[in-house]
Image (cartoon, rainbow, N blue to C red; front, side, top):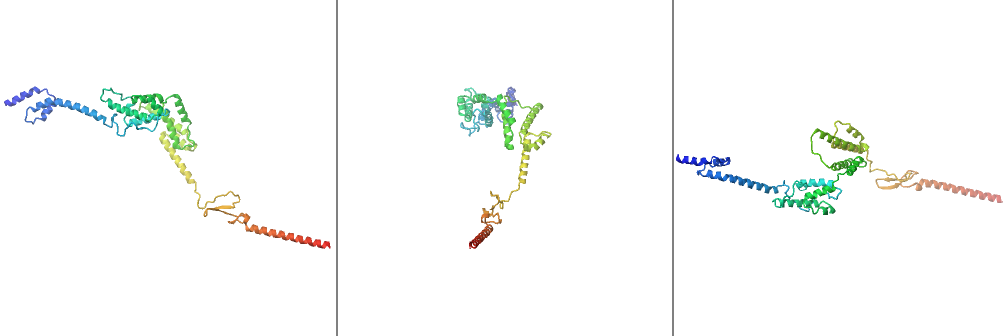
Length: 365
């Protein structure tokens, strides 16, 4: 009993221990040594702090090798890589800009050009990793610009500086460009184009006009924003239907009378089905001519020659007796008749000569 009282008195001064110490003490309650709980209670806070520090460092190091980190570089990433097929020449900046943003976003490197991941201090432990990724992005930008533009941005230190310089120089958002695009949209007609090509050209002009806006509005789901979007699509539908050829007049009238109004992709689908049905109907009305017995007309107006499909050669036809194998100048009937006429003429002349001779003889005597 005296020993147990001393043990309780020894434990009573440690009544202010933390919950972690108490839990550690309970965990070792079955131990035979009475000093073990006190040792664990003293050393446990330091152990918890050490684990927190090591856990933070481990997470920081793992983030560089994480595919979701902007500092991650794939084994296929190299400075000579061309991440887009467009080459910036100054006149195609809008298309180049969109393609580059898509590719950089796919590689999780968009933060190096939009300024959201600025250059750290050289004393920072992240500086070398940031500098490596920054140089990689700079190389990708240099690989997809023309030679003249290449020399003008080669000495930029940051990829964000390159990006901003190209944006300020080549972004097209002025009034003359908008005027040209608006005019091209309203004057574009289908003409000799098929429906798919006409729709593609019209849609490209709409996208180019939309890209000339200086500021982009934030996404909003209010009713007023929905009304504005609906009016914009209605305007595109009218422009698209106005440029169609007259053979779409019937289906175009039906579309204009539909309530509620269908969307632009649905309208294109209806027009495409209508065009396909008309093409099928035209093919069914045209009856194919038999090739085995097809007769080819000749240049002779009297049809003195015909084409025989069996032999593939021209055989003459007589216009007098309508028989094959000879022409009228070699027809035996014609020659027989002419021969008879000639004989009759010769006999007549011979008789006249005899008559004259006899008259001369009688009159002479």
